[in-house]
Length: 353
Image 1 (tube, rainbow, N blue to C red):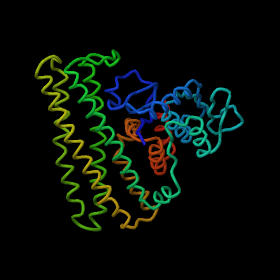
Image 2 (image 1 turned 30 degrees about the vertical axis):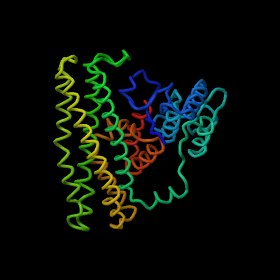
Image 3 (image 1 turned 90 degrees about the horizontal axis):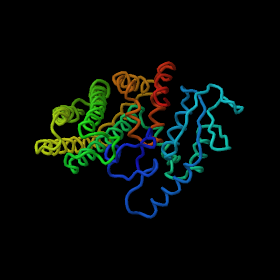
Image 4 (image 1 turned 60 degrees about the vertical axis):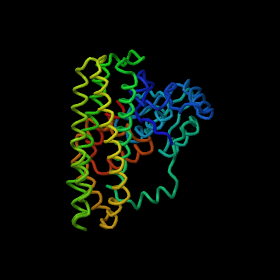
């Protein structure tokens, strides 16, 4: 399934700034050159003529789920805060044209999938749900973080490749701004990614790796070494972006600096992809052998989220942006399971605002 940003609205940003390898059509994403995806795009465009309103509390988890699903469909959603929607129900309510829909999460998600069939939400099968139940909570959370980080790194790689291809020329989209303005946006995006990367590594080193090391000393040595290996690359990318930001976009030095930045980002992409794959397949499955009960699993997850407070406050949307709607719902479930009502409410307001 093609990954589609959980928060993307109909954007005026350049293709390079969002997903350079895809074609953006009225809020939906298709790959060049296939009649099937063109037909799917046409179907989505036809459904988007309907006005979709979502009524519900800004702190409602269910309302956040519905918003994820609708944005995945490329449908523009108008969220109307209301603790008691006036449709005979206290639950969140969808209003699409003259239709009003409410009910359980599963019921409304299936309605959304039927009403806006492309792209499909990808509802989990019974086998997938059973497998998820046996996977330790922290392993589920880390796997989802890996997916989001991978998406963001790939996005930056393609963005810089596009900048280099343009040879210092500005985007055809004036809303992106001048080359220097675009570099500022790139710098901000990488700064957010860097903060998530560093907190993710600290979380593993402070919470997860010590648990595994107590069970089998030396098990996490390679993973720790890889964290240390990538730190100079990440810092080098930050400095490279800063340097390019003050260069003349028409100079040979600018083009060379972009080429060097592209090389560094590709190194980070390759290293992180390999590192995440090794952790997901060869290291994290041993968390199940630790045999924590549900309460112990919850405490471990709480400790992990405490380390990642920055990510789960001002960068929560950024993290969820790199996930499919179904994955974002799963991560939100994990976050809510180990946070008090007040903290959960403040985070949900970030999502729906």
